[in-house]
Image (cartoon, rainbow, N blue to C red):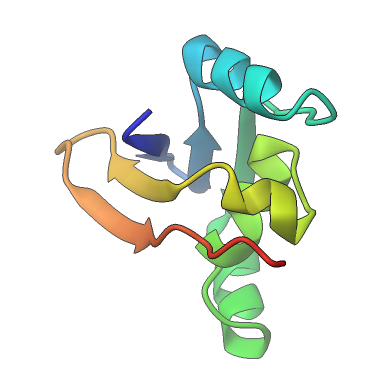
Length: 101
């Protein structure tokens, strides 16, 4: 897998971050303990508040969406890209993590 692509859809009241069934299956085969979700919705106001206090929301969304929170397990996933579903443009990238020894 070259990259895990997370689709980002703008709604009237927020954003939906989602992955397809093939990505969920690939994650489960790489990390059997993972519990990936189909999607996560975040309202505009929540995103704004979150980023004002904690930083870029995407850095917190992908572990929750992919169902993986261990650093060593995240390093197995490689590059992660957030794709705008309307334009197909990559709007945010998370480079591959270096596996801890």
